[in-house]
Length: 323
Ligand code: COA
Image 1 (cartoon, rainbow, N blue to C red):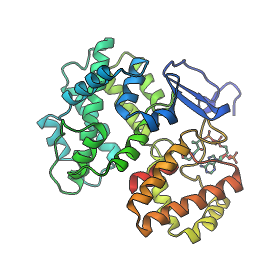
Image 2: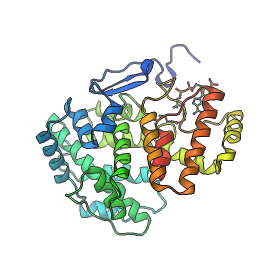
Image 3: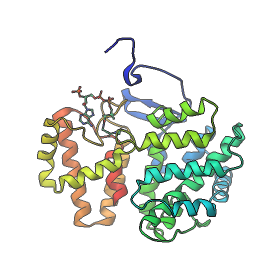
């Protein structure tokens, strides 16, 4: 290896960000100065989105206005719904959402408006439309007709409504909302970096987000939460968990949901998401749900004991989403 080449961009600083701060020394993450744990438990996702885009938390009228704007941008075109209806039912959901965002970019007459106001409007547009893209595709793969948005529902409630035709208990909505806040921002992770490379060519924001979704799909990045669930299924039973982990480490397998490029002694988002995962286990309250909880505790303890590598956000988020 040449000393002149920064493999994997290790040690390369390309820009600064005012939006979030990752502090590995203290295992903390702030959005615009607010600790992410406080936002996840005390704010809802719309407030977090407003904070990230505007620099401070909204007043009550500002939040109401933001929610009205998001609701006004909901709804997919008949053309996009027809495209989703043609997707391969076995296609990976990240492939379909990437294609849907790209489609939105070619049908939006304002795609080329990269003024700050134009970018803000299109960001709200994507915030409002992407959940419906995911939900319509989810239903399509099950052979079900799409369900349109409901303007009486907030962001997270509306997502469940469009996926399942019903809104679950507020405690379930809260767990999902917590995950949305914890995933909302992480300074220069791989997908943000991909988006910024594209944006820096003065391409449009849909192209940047389409590229970012491609980067996010990878199991070494956002795809890890799905991979964690495949791992838990492979382990099968809590009684197998310790041995499974020790064997996998001996075989030099990469264990999904562990390790982090920046955090070396734990991911600040994990305790909050682990509480949300446990809340889901208790709400669902089936032997299967408790089994995944017990297995995850053993895998976590064994990995930390054997390697000193800690879980990242994807480790509790994968099974929480599954439940
Ligand atoms: N399972 C097993 N070993 C791991 C590991 C994991 N999840 N994460 C790191 N390691 C090992 C590496 O193999 C390396 O060992 P070596 O020195 O014997 O080669 C050592 O720990 C140092 O890790 P390093 O490769 O420097 O980490 P990185 O910064 O390059 O990679 C990740 C970070 C996130 C890509 C990596 O931890 C990983 O692939 N994790 C699994 C996927 C995942 O959960 N991604 C979501 C991230 S939020």
